[in-house]
Image (cartoon, rainbow, N blue to C red; front, side, top):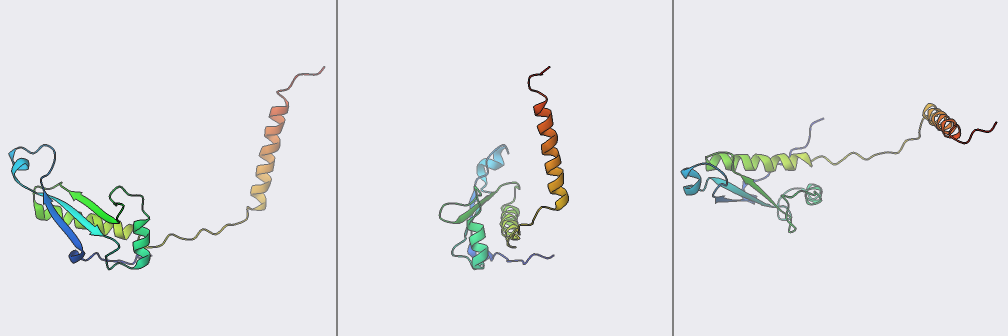
Length: 135
């Protein structure tokens, strides 16, 4: 089954260049190669059902205002970090693109009922045998 692909438009995404954290020598102190990606979900051109599922996520990258914030700093190149951040946003949107399947309740089978009752009666016998012994 193919998932419907809702592409995130790059015009709806705001990029900010920041300095990367962590070790990296002199380069990390001078160059703003890390990228902050901000994507405003309510103002986006995504379909409404996709927006609702995206806003319902309990993800730490989603702010209270409905803005997805992704930080990419794995590469030394700012352009590579932009591509990485955009790919991670697209992956997030693709993960919720298809609605979850509706669970339909089913009846337990006759055999499963029998096995459950058999297990209960065995357990009952084990517990009854633990009582005081009457001679």
